[in-house]
Length: 140
Image 1 (tube, rainbow, N blue to C red):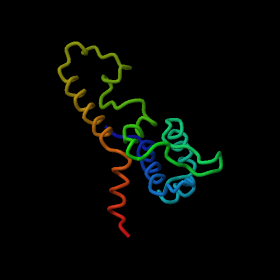
Image 2: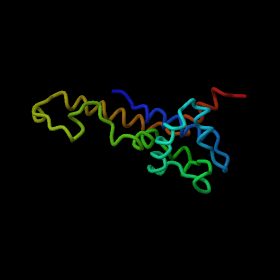
Image 3: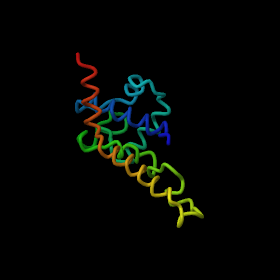
């Protein structure tokens, strides 16, 4: 299983907002510079984070971004879900693919268990956890 670039960059972008949040918001150009991301690609990342309700503009269209809730209330699963509809390690778990062996496949339970563990891990890591790790690494 591989996480999409959008999910990976989304985590970096929202972490950058959390690191620099001071009430006035963090500008997209600063997120792009600090995280070494293309500003054009970051447009899509920011839009998805806003649609998911994880960030918002402080005062309107040309202002900086802030979190919509405290970092300890935003999980990595929340960020992942801003970009992907679900965690799915194999196609047969998606509900979209109808597997001919679904009734007799003994490995499906194994894959579902792995899927659940990944989801639980993402639920168990908050933005506050990443923020603390960042602060520990970057002690002045």
